[in-house]
Length: 302
Image (cartoon, rainbow, N blue to C red):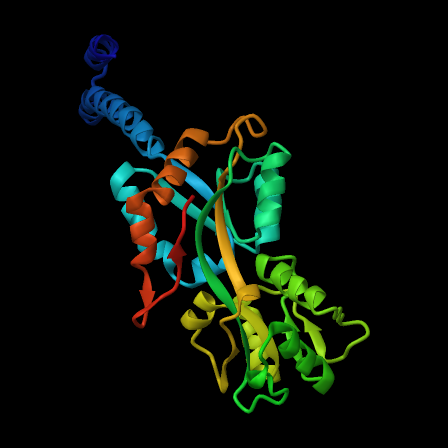
């Protein structure tokens, strides 16, 4: 490149000697310098661009509760500081996250529907499922508790009280992990409400935060994971009215997407992220995340 510039300089010198006009003479005399500077700039840019492209990252398809609670803001910088790998989060319902990953739009999953996660791996979409952490679901409602579910001694009894009183219940209705858990609870109680035949049963088709907002505005009961509720600001007169029973257990899993199914997936980075999450360091970081002094997730990696 330097030789090319020197040849340019010789050519311009010849042209310059042929030009009597002083102004043109001066303009042309500066041109080799411009060409040379441009060449240096091109070289500099050529070396600079790959540096930006080398920053490794993975896409995490995730349930919304882990994002809304603030967990990722706590743990992901620790992983990036350790490995140099950035984690870009796509927070949607569990059902949508699984579909996105199945379509190869993501490198790793964190969701909370164990049966669906196992099926995802069995179909060849994921490499291996790991237990990661747990918390629990709670039933929220207006402080005056029109269905009197606070006095119920089982989940089935609490849901039966809602049905008997025809009290409004806001369901996510979006095939998310929380929606799937809600459906399991209704089925276990031999109750199958639907919005078409039950005016008190309201399906929002929205995420957890939006459904909580709707429930507060509509004075409705709803099911939420505890972490999202504790991080939720617009509580109005709503409060936790039913909690602490085994059917409300909420398990989260982590699954790297299979490179066999998705050739372009960054499986090595995804496996590195998964290994860190289930390691003592990753599990400690999860346990250390709190809201107002309350631990929101409890590590239980297998």
